[in-house]
Length: 353
Image 1 (cartoon, rainbow, N blue to C red):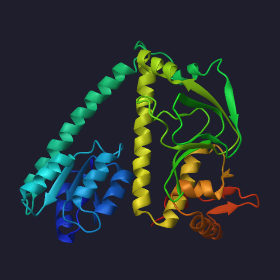
Image 2 (image 1 turned 90 degrees about the vertical axis):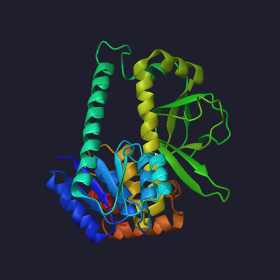
Image 3 (image 1 turned 135 degrees about the vertical axis):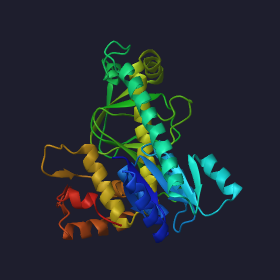
């Protein structure tokens, strides 16, 4: 059953529209304002979004912007509901990427026809994409082994970094990309006041430092070892040659970039809207998803509070207080050495603002 996200702050309009849509055998997810709508779009990944324009907290244009900037939701068809017939609103909606524009009051058939057209068009597009992927991933397709980046590491000298040691700094010349043979790495940015915000986390087998490899500019962030780490620097020329000659490598790298953008967009939304408790919980879950051995019952990590605060996007003092609350609530355990053990992953994942 196709899933429709309906974002509408007017209770009567929301209930009437829900009944109309459900009668046509669609499953409806409801959101009472734009902020909740963005959160549910990311969590539910609906097949189509129907959204009001004039709403408190975050209006429909803000919802559309957030949805289209997120890699996981950017493909979702978007239909506006509005009581206004302003040409300026219509033009702005189309420029932001809306697929249709329905004015209130509307007939049931008008709404359903708009939904059906977009759903059918999306189904057709998905079939075309699946055909393309089947062709690309066929065993006879030029490319070979998907672990293509590892081939660039063979017979190269590695470098070792101690825990908390800087790998590169903002402004350093980008001479290649880094491959992690063993260890963990964090990249981050700072502002003029010296506040730190983590931009990404990397583990054994990951590559990083590639954001400026094509334009020849300097690194725009910092990289630091979260624990004793062994790296190989792959020269820029060799990496670009691989991408030019190997379709599988190019495909894998594009997916890597897309996932990177999506992760950062979701983090920005979290920083903008989430409470302190939610930010800290999300940071712990991020570490779990990135580094945990999922065969183990519990996950623990020894990470400095400054590093963890930069991942959560909050002040270290606030983070420490929140960790104390989580410890008292039996969500985590904090060892004498500072090691954090997640005791209740489910509650942390589902922590509400």
